Length: 212
Image (tube, rainbow, N blue to C red; front, side, top):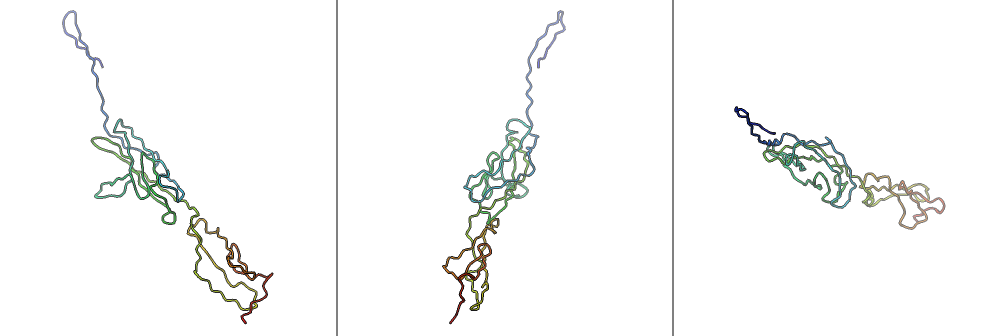
C-alpha cells in the first residue's frame, strides 16, 4: 500500500512511501482426508513392493504448514501417537501403501491400518487420521490334504456296495469345492467318484472278491 504524508504549508507538500505488508500463515488448518474409510484388496503371494492403495489429504494452509506426510499410527504410549512409515507387511510413502513382503491369506486375511496425515508446521504440527481396511484375496496355492493318513474300509466278499468315501480339503477356502479324485493304483474292480471321493465297485469288471 502507499502512504502519503502532507505538511501544513502553503502550498502543501507531500511525501509518499510504499509499504509492503506480508501476512504470515498460521498453522491453523488440520489436514483432511478425502475419505473417512478406505477399502482395498490384494491377491496373496504378490511380490514385495506391490501397490495396494493411495490415500490423500489436503491442508488449506500454505508452505510447510500445508506440506503433508503420511504415517501409520502404530499405538498410543502415554497419550502420544507412535508414528511409523511401516507397519507389519506394509509401508507408506507419499500416501502410497505398498507391501514389504508376500502376503499369505491362510496366515491373515484382513488388515486394518490407521493412517495419519501430518503437516510440517514449524511451531506445531497438526494431523488427522483415517482407517484403511485391506482384504487379502485367496489364490489356489496349496495342495489337497486328506482328512486321514490311512483309510481302512471293510467289504464283505461278493457284496456289491461302496466300501467307503475318502475326503480331502484345501487350505484355500475359496477353492474347497474344486477337488477331483482319481485312483493312482491300477485296479479294474473299483472306481472312485471324481467329485465325491466315494469308492465304488466296478459293475462291469467286478467278479466278486474271495478271501479264500
